[in-house]
Image (cartoon, rainbow, N blue to C red; front, side, top):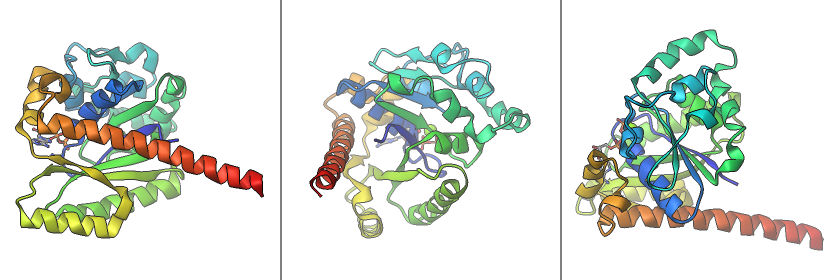
Length: 269
Ligand code: ATP
Ligand code: MG
């Protein structure tokens, strides 16, 4: 069952953090136990859920270098989920990890002790394929790829798929794409429609039905340190992330039913 999800795309500004924060809040509202891990030294996911990144010590940085456990680092948010915070200090992890053994596996190993505390663990990855992202991809069961439907998006996607293949071959054989999420969607643009169609053609059911529209409330909510459902619940952005959480839960239930069916057929035979 998918539990650990890396929200990733090496392209910047495509809606990774917005998705990680808002999906965490919506899943929590659906009764799921959620941990959000901020893997980006920008610390936007941390502030986006109301945690002051400057004051946050220890952070995921101390976890990665083995100085603090996840239990000692995670913080509860006001929105029903926990966050493993990050701040600029995390930028140093790249260098500090060089001297440490098993450096690609450090987050995965740290997570073992808290895996059972959660139904979902979401990771907000930085816009780069660095050691932080690699740690995220190695710890993940699946990846969620937010993308804007624009001209260069498909090119970027090809690079990302190649990267995932490498990670699968060398570090995490279980890694799969959970889904592609169309973000900042503007249905009036012909190019957007075209790219969206191509995406569905190539990736079929891996493309989420739910589409995240361009919505100013989604851009405003982080400055209040709130996920959008706590800021303007009736906005189109909030409604879209609620639907995304429901789609994720449906998919999970579907795959459990499918597995149960396979098991039942096995028993009948
Ligand atoms: P980075 O690569 O820098 O980490 P990111 O992929 O995490 O960026 P976000 O920070 O989530 O992207 O979004 C980039 C900007 O676009 C932010 O200012 C955010 O508030 C805004 N934004 C994200 N999604 C939407 C949306 N659906 N509608 C309007 N604005 C959005
Ligand atoms: Mg981000």
